[in-house]
Length: 360
Image (cartoon, rainbow, N blue to C red; front, top):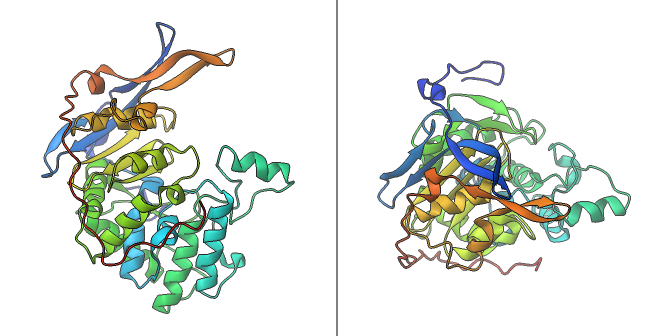
C-alpha cells in the first residue's frame, strides 16, 4: 500500500495542462483566471466532456465522504436520515450540526473526548462569528469533519474494532473504507495521504470520482448506496449548512448527491446516473459553484430557469463593497452547453422514509 510517506509515481495524464474553467472580470477587464479539470458523464456513463487531466489521481478531500459513508454502512454502522447525512458532511458548525454529532456519539456510548479530528473553528459564515463572540476557540466537535469522525467511531463500535487508533491507515475501519471507495470508483487508489481532519485520504481520478457518485445516486432501494443518497438529498442542510452552495444544489435537484471538498474539488450525480467531478488547479473555492452549474448544462440541466441554481451561475467581484464584476464560467464550459430541459428522472425510494430533520 502506498502511504503518505511514499509518493505514487505520477500518471502521464498529470502532465496534461489544466485549461481555464473560470474567468474573473472586474467590469469588462479580465483580471484573473482559474484553471482546472472537469469531467461530465451522461446517464449511460459516456463522457460528455473531459477537460484537463481527468484520469490523473487527485485527492478528492471531503468529496470522498459519501463513499466513506457507504463503507461505514457496509461495516455495520446503524445510522439513517439526518445523522447519516451528517456522517457524509463538511458541516458549517451550526447548533443543529453539533447536536447531531453528539447524538451519533451518544448512540455509540461515547463523548466528544473520543473524537480525534483536528480542533478547528466552525466554517459557517454565521456560526463562526457567533462562536468567537461567545469567547470560544477551536474544538474537535466544531471541526467540519466531526460528523464523519463520530460515525467512524460508531462504526468501530458496531464492528467490534478498537477506537483508540481508528485513524491509522491500517486500522480495519480504514481498510474497509478504502475497499468501498475502490469498489464504487472502479479503480485502485494509488496514494494514501492525511486529510486536514487527520483521517486517511485515498486518491482517485476525477473520472473515478464521478463514476462513484453515479453509483450512489442510481443505487436500488434497500442498498447502502441508496441509503446514503436518500439521507443526503433529504437533509442537505446537514451536509453543508445555511447559505452553502452544496446545500442549495441538492435542494434544487431532486435525488442529487453533491459534495464539496477542500483544494477545489466538487462532485455531483443525478438519479439518472449523469455526473460531474471537477478540480480547480489552484485549490480555490471561489469558482466551484460557477463551474459546477456550467457543467450541469452539459447534461441537460437548465440552471438558468431554476431560481436556486441560477444564484450559483456567477459569483460577485466586489469593489468598495458592491458588485463591480463577476466570476463566470469560461467559454470552454459556457460556449458549448446545450440545455435539453429534460424532466428529472424518478428517484428510487428506500423502504423506510428518513427521519425528519431535528435541526430546522
